[in-house]
Image 1 (cartoon, rainbow, N blue to C red):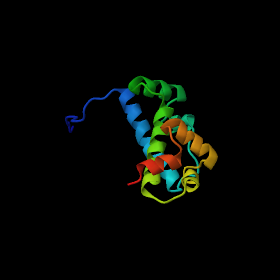
Image 2: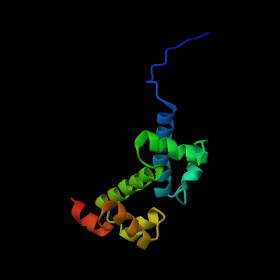
Image 3: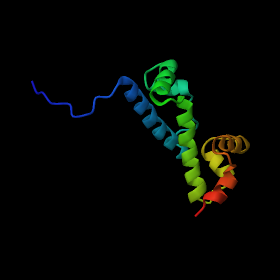
Image 4: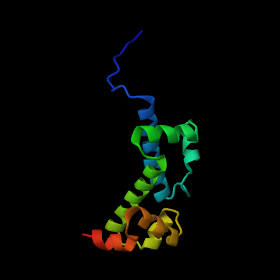
Amino acid sequence: MHMYKNTQKNISRGEEITKQYMDFLDHHIDEVITGKTLDFMKLSEIADKLCISHKHLTDTVQKETGNHPCHFYDMKIISQVQGLLRDTDLSVSEIARTFTYDPSNFSKFFKKIVGDTPNIWRQKNRS
């Protein structure tokens, strides 16, 4: 029998679930942006894909990070949006549609998290 030493750091199941969730979000958001997926998944759908319950995912990520899973979902979306606002000439409406948002709801979502509207943020952060 072949034995090998596990050289990976031992991580807890909670850390593993949290990492799987974060990796899933990165992949999923990329698929939405590129049009491979038509809409963002609900948290319960992501939990199903990770083969855990919605409650277990929520409780675990909250315990491991101090934040609700939706916080990371929103932050990862905002980060991608900020990149497009900074690095492209796409209109805010085009960016909103890329992220499957209605443009008026998108601006409210962005301002709630960032503190500025997408256009004002773009003006402040363009090089």
